[in-house]
Image 1 (tube, one colour):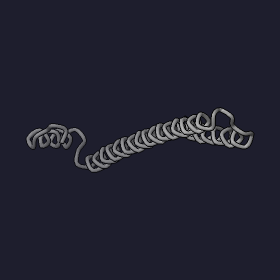
Image 2 (spheres, rainbow, N blue to C red):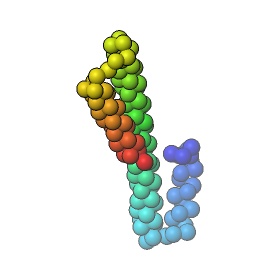
Image 3 (tube, rainbow, N blue to C red):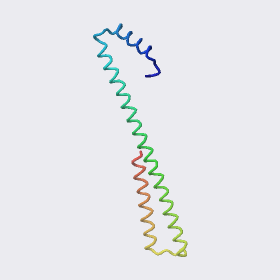
Image 4 (tube, rainbow, N blue to C red):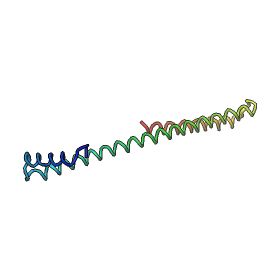
Length: 112
């Protein structure tokens, strides 16, 4: 425990008994145990928050990759049709760009 051997722990217990006395020692041990439990809980909460942030970053990266693929596909389709996109196809592409940007904004908003 904390790089301490049995002899060192025994020494700390003896000193604690001498300075605190047998009446206050159990109460002090409970306080120390609660302190370590709260530290452990804080570390666990920080770990969970970090894992959540990493997951959100990965989701944003995936969303950007999908956006690039969609835009590349739209460009290829536009080029294959000879650059003469109809109003309907243009509206579809505009809706698609708006929806992917909204999804990215939603992911970014959750991250902040």
